[in-house]
Image 1 (cartoon, rainbow, N blue to C red):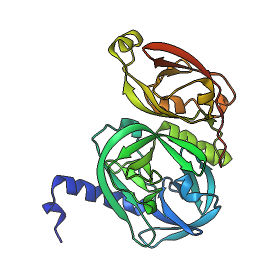
Image 2 (cartoon, rainbow, N blue to C red):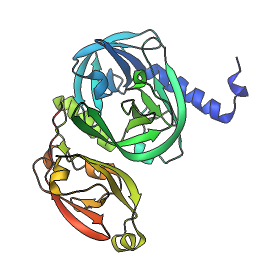
Image 3 (tube, rainbow, N blue to C red):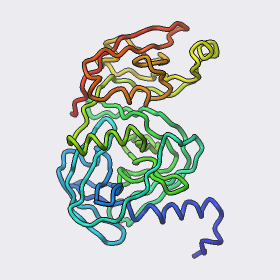
Length: 306
């Protein structure tokens, strides 16, 4: 086995991040299912994916040091694919959380999971996209996970709920393997995530407004950028049929400039306005369509889990 000192710089970084983060990542046993979770407080709160938890109320978390603890599900939020768990017994200390808003495309990231029976799983890659929207279908139902991080670090279903860490071993995302088409995706850890966690701890759920948009960041044409002082917007690649966005007249191909009179440069620009206070209220959205600015009035509905 090679000594760490003999490894190249890339390998040293990945191995040091893996060593720092892996102890804080749990393997979850939830009924017939399994996944991973990340300890994010020293008193035993864990963060994982909502789709890992499903409708379960409890389960068992196991760590690489042999520690096991039963846990209770505090709450889930399908729109962000996040869930908070509370361990009944002792857990390792909290992982260090970072800020995904500081990520840049091309940056090194390390995905750490704890699939059942594999005692820790590590893959590495780079951030290949930011501000993505991820549509997830289940039969005829559809939901959209907003503002995800895209990475070429390989993920498998057992890694869902595990940590995506930067080169400083700060957890900047919670891995989600629901894409199903060879892409690594992670829910960002940022101010919006912290707001979701707070709501889950307080109420067990997050009342969320729903529009039904799938978009990616896109540059604005030079004349529009000069006029608005804004360089990027959100290109709509899909509008969910029958959704509030569809009923309001938004279309795939529209370039969103603002929502609620606030500039939109990525999916989070809309997502941060879709908490409980937005439900049933008029939300004006300005888009660039065929070279003209068009104002569309949307009315978000409440996201209902199916």
